[in-house]
Length: 291
Image 1 (cartoon, rainbow, N blue to C red):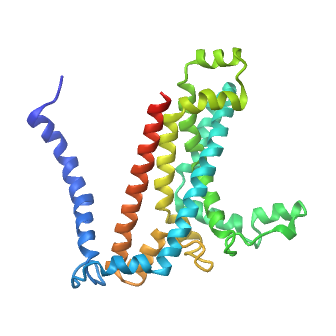
Image 2 (cartoon, rainbow, N blue to C red):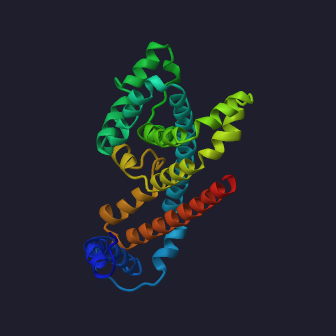
């Protein structure tokens, strides 16, 4: 039985009301606040584009933007590359597939707070397990100060994010792998297409939908990264792990510059929408071309 007219409106109304109150209204108020000099969540004088012009020339914001872009590129490339390898391996090993697949999702289910404190201990130079293992292998001279060195801090945090969502990403690729017609795989094997040749000729094309999903999710998640840098480093050392979300938090809740912090949040929203829509459009177009 189809639901039409008033019945449909009645069913949609509660969700629409909640969405309007908790998403649309705060968004409109945030945009309005960004055009003022308010130091609290309300009030302030209208200043036009002053906050936006300041943000575009603010060294702290530009540095955080650079960190965020580097972090996003590393996470997207490494996470999806490793997830593809894991998915391909599990696709070939049917006997261990179900058991391992359940375990792959466990890190993604953990709270960022717990993960942040766990890996702060793992990276600790004072009795941390990673440094203990390197000492045992005679690699003491190569031990970096993982979260204390500006050259390694950002990548150390990126590695944790990759660890958390590698299994989730691999599960999506694996689901796509298992949806491939076995006859195509068998025909490719009979034709001598194996390894890289088969991946490039067949897998690469048929995995297009999962590429779109995984890259979209990893790009959006990476651009908005906040939890791990906030918990583990607070943007240190020397602002090496300062991200846009962390700058927004510091301006809004540490410096009480609500208007400026909201301006940065609006700019981050615009950046996320532009990048997300652009890459999703390109990937969808790729799907159509490979179909």
